[in-house]
Image (cartoon, rainbow over all chains, first blue to last red; front, side, top):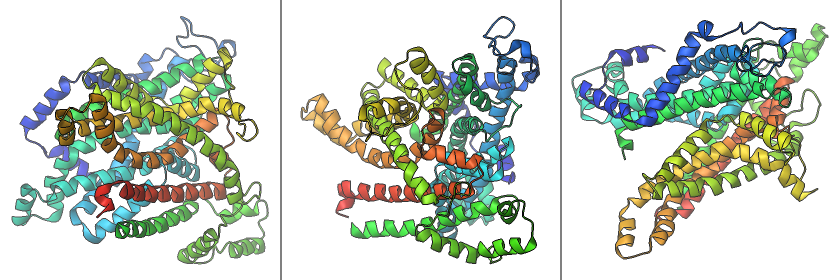
Length: 294
Length: 314
């Protein structure tokens, strides 16, 4: 399943000139840079969580139950006396990982089927397209909830559920892109030279359909982070006592009046992280997708 | 035109069949033996055999599927494992609540999203467009359950303007019903309004750049009429389809909104069923939503054929 990605990373899809032009446009897109900055911030926080956190995120204490924000507890404490800031810092790991892994699953499932459907057409295409339509008929979150419910609540199952639910979008997008490049001259010449189908797909088609896929992946990370938070909020994601932003909100909603800080901060973190990925996705679309140029 | 519609209807059939297969297979990925769960403490092999026979678990999968499909086709979605109430009846009770929520949310999304999209397109490059874009991106990024919590804290707890939770039927007390549903509907509409705004904006930008708009301008049609009568009418065409399709998203969003505002609707039914491991209900709900969505999709496409003159006379 990982082969196509390795190939995409190794094979320089576009000539360097195009890539640097895209980078130039991206660099000058202020909104995109703000998005990239936000994403980078959360990635660094998640990676360096043990250094950033001021307290042990699991340390409960009866004497510090539901304390408002103070110099000692920057963002207050929760119903078990745990430091909200430190739990949020560790929660960033769960959220970012869920976003990233779900999208990797969605792409690992969706992109190969999209390539096959678009490249071979005919029966293969009909079969794959019908299944995709059937999956798209079930709203994303409802499918994810049903899958998470049937698979059992855990972070891994939530990621699988979100990934599988998001896969049809990648099938559809990849298929459409392949249809657009299938009859291009460079594909025709490769075929005339006698290249095998697998080689044409991996070396000639895949690199050229990558840009819109990267844009879609970035935006889907944003969707997946909200989806993971939603599942955790419902109790179907990461299980206690492990911190995730969604599960923190799940308990916080019971203390809305007594401890509003328990809800305000984790929710702001979800909002900011998702906004970051959405801004980045918009910027990448402007830079990578020439058809969207204004 | 009728050929087009007929073709579209025929394409929906394999999709419906596939969805039913998927929903049927959901119960098969459940870990463990369902018979052991059903039998509870009872582990008598005779009882287990009886149950296996009763639920046709000894038959091959395709046979099981066809038997299940036959049941479903007659409207029998099984019974809740908890309350023994038929699933269809449960759905019938809860659906009107969610439909009210969804309809109100759609209303807010339309009256905010479409005008915002038009303004952003007309005022391209001005601060207004920038503000509208940032608002739309924020609307897409804010988790609606969190927005609900914050609104409850401010509007219900601090200001005491609106009730924080519950549900009142509009047939019992219309204004109280609107008041209780106002906040949940606003929360549910945010992402939708953002989505509609972005689509309206790009459709309008495209329409405003079209030749017929330039012609209209050249012959001296007032700018307001150019935007509203010439550009908007063309730009709205794809939006009509989009609105029908977004009802699916609304149902999904309603799951969380209903959870936050404790509204006894469709979404609450799913979540409660999930936690009670009431799989018959989960399965029934997913099937209903999917079939409803496919039919909406079909309706959207037919509507599109009907309102699009280029297809109407095809």
